[in-house]
Image (cartoon, rainbow, N blue to C red; front, top):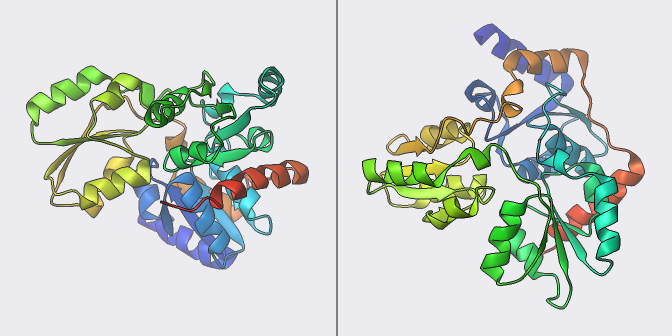
Length: 303
């Protein structure tokens, strides 16, 4: 492994590349990152980086977002089979049909979606800013929220506003069960519970904090507690423990392990930079329309 890491560093310099890694990746992949974070934050970092090549260690829709925001850079993904089941739960054809049924609705699209679906949407959102994005839509307009029904339901209840919810979900987060929170709370009664809004409603109801991956990391760093019960993909545990060595973290279930996220390896990262493949490209017209939805989101002031 040390030899591969050295080779990766050498290739990165030769290609003038930047390595972006999502919080759910393997520990050794996280340790090789130039930037570690959530999908949209990483793409924003990519657009700011003085690099010719982006090696995006995440799943395909994340690399697509980087390609949309950085059309002048070459975007690589270590394993092109690293897809997202939730993103696959909505197609352009289905979305167009739904839009015909609700012609006056604003389409709010979670970034966990394909570029083609983003291009059919009015505005994007992340798990961190979904409430701000939905709140930016006038209340006299319908909102069609795609594709995550759990995040949409969480936003709907928080804003006391009905939304048209797409029946998509994250299989990894839906493996996290409320009964596991009860079990771990009995064993660790002083621990704070923090979960991702892709979790089911009953899990969210038992949490002290509901946040995006970056929000969970910030909460665990800033909160004066010694132990945390964490409900999201288990890859985040490496980041949490590395940043907070004096705290204890209990992942809600080992089943919250996204196999697609774990397809990327150091070896595949080396191969990608050696061969400059697989490249992730987005058709120009699709990219232009998707970029408008992303930029409209970015224009909303942060709270």
